[in-house]
Structures are given as structure tokens and as C-alpha cells.
Length: 372
Image 1: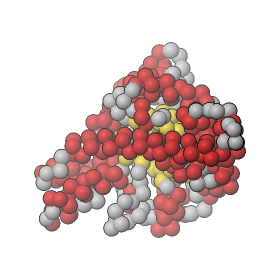
Image 2 (image 1 turned 60 degrees about the vertical axis):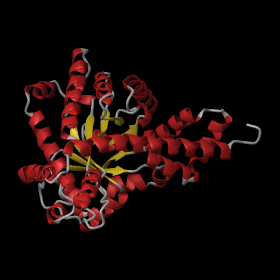
Image 3 (image 1 turned 90 degrees about the vertical axis):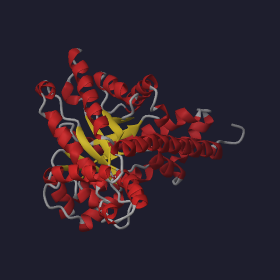
Image 4 (image 1 turned 45 degrees about the vertical axis):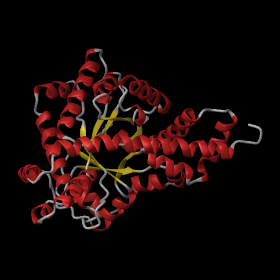
């Protein structure tokens, strides 16, 4: 057991693995990470599944059966991915039970090509919830304008949701309100709020990537001094907003009815800029009641040389506001940055899904028996 990861967990940060594969499940690697590296949850995305399915023979038997049945690629994708996620849910179930449903969660994503279609997103979320059939599932829905009512509706139906692709503070406020609305509707029809879970995935490193690209164009010492500062500032202010929302009468009424908070989740926490420490988005975002979902490499880096020195969020609120103000002053528009990031995020996820469809199509063709 890593002492550093143990300390991170003790500070209130839930460590989730940002990866899943049948190889990892079959080998016992995920169970080992849960047992020995303090991993208490799993997230997935289309890119992760595409690499897993096309890079391993562990899927061949299932894909061959799907090809024999002449299942179309969309249904094949659901069968393959929900199988892995169901298995991961079973591996994490003891954690789910031990934490009263707070952790032990596994996320699966709605087809991101539906991000701008509310009704289709709801229908797909229902299908995934039914197929996996595990209480510790999270269905991932993007925080687009069209995604917000889908989030509320799914929560109202008792479907636990991981809200993904959050970049802006305003959109995060909208996500929290959608969470409240969903739980209020669930309460009105008599649902048990204590079993409905949600996290809000606030993307981190991509903010620095976009902002620093703009700072490079501006040039000068002041711009250079702001490099690598925006993402952590944005995340810290997101946590401040979360705290403010948790003090409202609206939330307090839900909490008294048994609801659990929608924890902030730090996503995209692997460092993209080699000049930054490889654990910076872990070390600088430590506080109670959050999730940090990391690739395995970042988990091992944190275990080896992370600097966990207590809460690194609360004392940084004023400094974070100054960073965003300084960026605006020298010509980096926050509103434009987060708009671009959301649009690119949806597009990248859709492109990844198309790559996943292409990879599964090739596997279906490769493994189809002659004459099928």
C-alpha cells in the first residue's frame, strides 16, 4: 500500500481509475488496484474502450458470437461495453457497500453523438441503466445545454448520473441546479434519494492547454507567468461554488430527505505540459468530498512522488480569482475559452465514438465465420 495514496484518501479525495478493459478485469489488475492502491471507482470513455477492444483477444469470443447473430455494430457496442462495466461494478461492489453507496461506482458513457439531443440521451441512458443492472453504475451525460434536462429526468427516474464535460463555472452552476431539480422530482414521486448518486466531472488539464496556447500567442513576461495557472484556479472556484450551493435551503431540504451530495470530480488530470509536475492536478486539488479520476500512470506517479500536504483548495480562492482576472486583463477571454472547450470536447468525444464504431466493425468482420 502506498503511504502517499493512503494520505490522499485520508484527506478526503476518492481515487478513481480512468480506464477499463477486459484484460484488466480478467487479470485481476483492477481488483489489485482496489486492494492495494486505494482505488474506489472507475470511469470509462470511448477512446478507452476502442484501445481495449482492438488491442486484446479477450473480446474475440463475444465478438464472434455477435457476428454469428448478425448484430449491428451499435448493439454490439452496447453488449461489449456493458459486459465490461457490469464486471467492474461487481469488482467494486464491496466498496459500494462499505461506503453506503458513495464510492464503488463505475461510469459508462451515453453515445456522445447524442449530446445535443435531450430525448435520445434520456432513452440511451435508460437502456444502459437497464442493461448493466447494477446499483453502483453511473451513466455519463455531457453537460451541454441539451444535456441538462436529460440529467434532471434521469435522476428523477432513479438513474445515477456522472455529469461529464464541465468546463465553465456558469455551466457547473446549471449542472448543480439540474441535480437539485432531478432529486426534487424523485422525492415528489416517493423515490429513495439515498440510493441516487451523482458526480459532476469538472475537466482540468484541457483548460491549461487552451489558455496556455493563447498566452503563447500574446507573449511577454506577464503572459508567461500565467502559464499553467488557469486550470487549478478554475477547479478551485468550482469547489467554492459547490460549497456555496451546499449551504442553500434547497439543498438542505434534499439532504434531510436522505440525498447525498453531487461530489465534484476532477477529470482530465494527467499533465499535458511536460514543464509541469506530473502530479500537479492531484497535489493542488486536495480537499474533502471530491473525486480525482486518474489514468493508472498518474496513480503510480502520485504513489511514488506526489506531494500531499493537506487541503490545497480552500486557501487558494482569492488567488484563483486573481488568476482569472489577470487572464481577462491581458486578453484571454474566459467565456470564449470554456465555449471552445465544450464544443471541442463534444466533437472529440463524438470522433472517439466513431473510432470505436469503426474498430468494433472491423472486429465483427474479422471474426465472422465464413458465410456469415
